Length: 512
Image 1 (cartoon, one colour):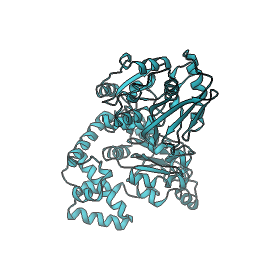
Image 2 (cartoon, rainbow, N blue to C red):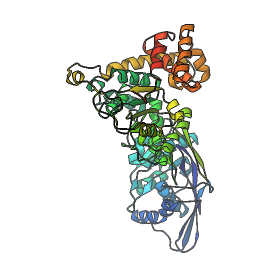
Image 3 (tube, one colour):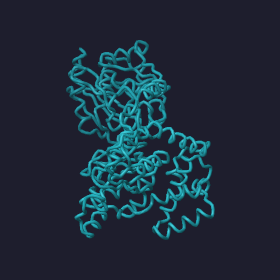
Image 4 (tube, rainbow, N blue to C red):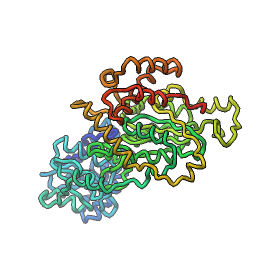
């Protein structure tokens, strides 16, 4: 007898329909898997056999099952096909009715005792099931609330193969998980508060101002200063002043982290913007993604959040240059012989480094022991094109004794965040019905429309181009920064003071 079960596979952060076809015929009790299964899928036959036995079903000895995972020209990976394969074998052996099989998508890993274990990538699978017109999706109980984030499809959580068999025989007996994801998201987000606050950082008003501009307009930042000046401390507090995630943004992030198998809590959305801080020993694949089985890298895991590269000049130059294209396009494409995958990578880059190998060039207290050749070689790890894509170049100086001993209460992250939110609202109103983009992501047409300057500002910028050697890309970035500064100051147009502050952030950080 023939049976067909619907399931899903992942390609990048999206899912597609897979038909698990099972045919039962004469044989010697063998289960054959075809359709380009990987090792974990091939091992399903042993898990499935033990799980079926644990449910007190009798598998006929004089039978042979051929299981085809269609389409046959795409590679199938992971243990999520255990459950549909088991149901297919039972249905093709006349141990389950096939009347309602076409209504469901089924995913899940099986234990040898018949228990159903959670799998990765459930959120995109639920989206695909809805798109393909499925009535419901049967999946592990631990993944149920993740799938319930999608409206318009019934979610049937199960914890054992016996439950699935009963549900297939009588769909009305199944329990449908019903939640209000937007309401739950809003309540959970209100309870989420960052424990790191800018009021804990003494001094560094210039760096705080630069990070405020970065958060308001999504501008990349490079902080340069001696060891212990507070660069890492400042970067770690940047998420606390960024605009909160919207529900749609949280859904997209959850989808990405679900595919990567990195959801810390299987029952909720990602509530905060990610902050990724990879070590400088990370490989190029670890940064941009890829591998034998392609997976998202750090730049994709920091999507809609922050990628903080501490000790930026310790990263190999070849690794850093792989960031150049994603910084422009906000996505990364990984090409392999069998497939090409595109992952989102709209991140805010924050880099931090010392001014020289010893870290004390230009310091007011300690003497720099580096030769000019050593300093040039040190900075040579950062290519000109990469530095050109970093909007804000900030000097973070050593704190003076009076600043360290001061008991002055600095401005809180919440106060800064309110200003950032007002500037973001201005940008949203400016975009109107068009898709929203931050100032730092404006295209040429938007730049020409929203970043007009008067003659005084034009002459000032022309002088800066000559004195600082700004490229055409840097010229545009100065205008974007000035637009963000004007929004923070509630200026309708870019004023000369706004432009002057923007130009100041493009000065060289190599020779403090």
